[in-house]
Amino acid sequence: MLKYNFNRILQLRGVKKPYTFLIRHGFPGNYAANMIKGKHRHLRNDYLEHFCLLMRCTPNDLIDWEPDTGSAIDNAHPMRQLIRGHETANMSIALRTAPLERLIDIFGSIETEEKGEAKEEETEEESEQ
Image 1 (tube, rainbow, N blue to C red):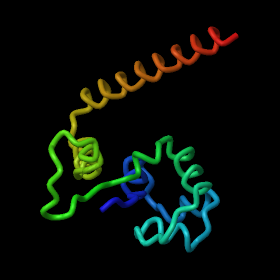
Image 2 (image 1 turned 45 degrees about the vertical axis):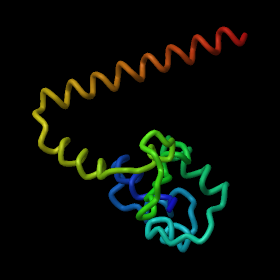
Image 3 (image 1 turned 60 degrees about the horizontal axis):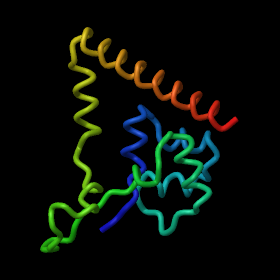
Image 4 (image 1 turned 90 degrees about the horizontal axis):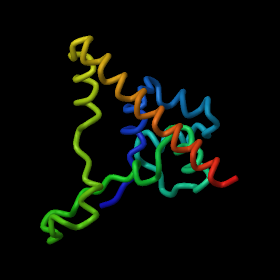
């Protein structure tokens, strides 16, 4: 079954109070509550777009897939990419327990990657002109 998992992204982005966060960013109360509980009946595309822009993600990042028991889908099927583990909890534990030097290395890697992306965007903008 396919389902949207908003909590995963909120946790990965370090949002401590998801309901309050969503309300502050323009989501109606009942809609925010249903997003967090995973009980939404339908998703409005404008809210989905707003959430993705806010959290810097894509709709694909929000979709989890749990194959039905006994489903015969081969291991190379693209849907398997949507089977999510428990990386949210594992990342939190890793960040809390990692030595300070390792955290500094990780932050440095992120900074380097962001600078590379910014440079690529500048190059694309210049080539468009």
